[in-house]
Length: 211
Image 1 (spheres, one colour):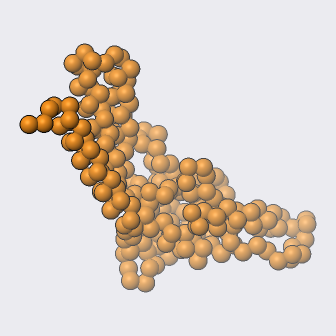
Image 2 (cartoon, one colour; image 1 turned 90 degrees about the vertical axis):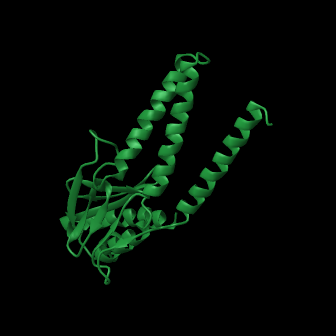
Image 3 (tube, helix red, strand yellow; image 1 turned 180 degrees about the vertical axis):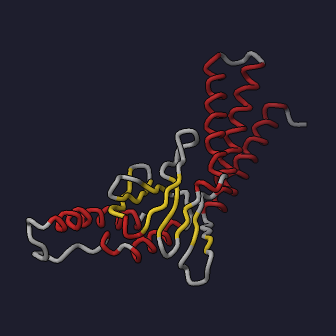
């Protein structure tokens, strides 16, 4: 019969291999929910299967830390690890609710303004296509659309199907991707300022599409 330490090592190794297999399966799937055949309306959401695996890992880590702390084999830093793991897992669980989904139709797009858990976020907002002034990528693989008032709609790489959303934004908002012709507007023309700014936005967003 296997001794107890070796038995635990084998179980941990099997669980680790199983989680890797699930992660690989989830990461290679890119579901996109379309609500009509023509693609005029659509919806993307966080990959909740991947989030479920992350939450499972968080619960296992917190449980192991709490067990060691209760048995007296760990000090208060171990308890802090358990509390932090539980807090992060709870934050991940909020992504299972539909207020993180991004939807669009022929009029505009609606989605969360933040990817933080409640009460900090997310708040949902609807933007009409003609109101969008900028499309950028921030550090950490987050993308956002922004209007003239600074309101944003945000999503990240965990939204599988976001390439289709980017294509739709490019279709509905060509001014974000096409620089104005040289000399097309006078310097004193107030309409000349936004296109110049959008030209640089185009470079950022195009780079985001390649990642």
